[in-house]
Image (cartoon, rainbow, N blue to C red):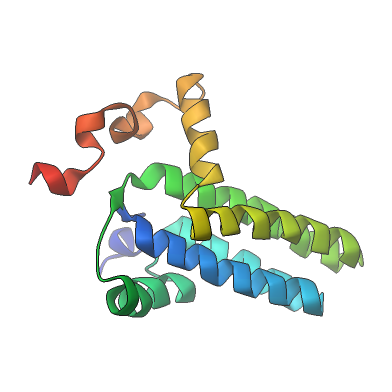
Amino acid sequence: MSAREVFSFPNPVNDYAARTTAGLVVVFAIIAIAVNNPVLYGLLALGFVLRVASGPTLSPFGQLSVKVLVPKLVRKEKLVPGPPKRFAQAIGLVVSGAAFVLSLFGLGLAAQIVTGVLVVAASLESVLGFCLGCTIFGFLQRAGIIPESVCEACNNISLRNPAAAA
């Protein structure tokens, strides 16, 4: 497998795998809040770094979702565009990175609050299938801040489910 293949984000993405990964993030983030230790905030941020860089390829949570949990528990696919999911992971990286930095500076309560925001967003994704980062991506794309070329499937309903076209 080439470096280019490793460091690419899938497009499309199985929404069930994304939701399962979000559920794992919720569990880990709650543990990080409870323990309130910089190491856990750092591991949470590292997970987002790995997912932004390579989707599920290098991410332990991504691999667990894609290779174990979704095939055994859900057994189906719902394909959605990848760029909004990557954008959502990047927002998660910023939020978890902020929590990590805050915890390093001894601001544990602030780190817990910031991580609480992450828990809310990841819970919305996991439980309700509402991706806050994807919604923000769509808003930014409609506002012209993110070019349409970044996600043509986001604007063209016929491209939203590539599997249906095959």
